[in-house]
Image (cartoon, rainbow, N blue to C red; front, side):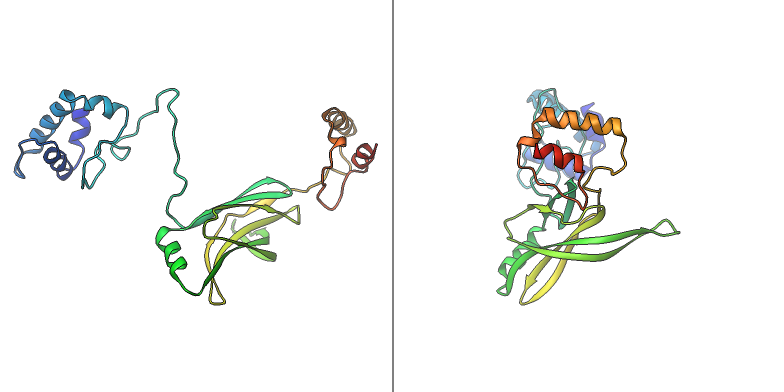
Amino acid sequence: MIRERLAEMPIEVLLEFAHAHGLEVTDGTAKSELVELIAEEIEETELEREWLDNHPVKIEQMKYDLLGAAAFSQTPSPGEEILLPDVYNETRIVLMLRDPAWAFAYWDIHDAALQELIDDEEFEELLLRVVEVNARNQTNHRTTVEPVASFDIPVQPSDSSWYIHLPQQDTYYRIDLYACCGGHRTLMAKSNVVAVPPGNLAVNGDEELAERADQILALSGLQKLDVATYGERTSQRLISLIGD
């Protein structure tokens, strides 16, 4: 298995690996000989175990990660913790709906672009523009998005996420990320559009379901909590229950 994977790699990578481990090879060494020499080295020095565990071998000034995920992927062992990076070094913003009243936005800015902003003497702040949009499906199966209303939230370069209260329900929202420099705003990224459902109970809903909902609400003890409501309409039965 090791020899097959080595055979798929560029000869330049194999040469770098061989030189780093002191194997006697030259630039004219055939690839088949390189594969055999490296395979024997891996087997003799217990690198095979590290290979199968998918732990990259650290080689100084190595252009390619010979033993990393770029060469092959492997299912993690049971109980093995997989750590995801905090950032991906790309400029983007993502919007996620938590409930009809709240959304969560997280973003990333490319290191070079962020450093350029910080070094700019006229840099003021980053801005999240919360945009309510009207999304319409056209006859050609494309969706047009027209801004309806918006408001701004100032954030710092050290910020990377934000919880956002949505003032309207039964509509659509997106987030625009702006950089403010010298009184000018530069659009850096636009998020996806999320659909926000109505924030109320159905007016003419099924009576049996409504009664069951009231029973569950009473058992939950929600009426004892100071819970804010949202949406233009709220069930009068819910108000009556909470007020008891």
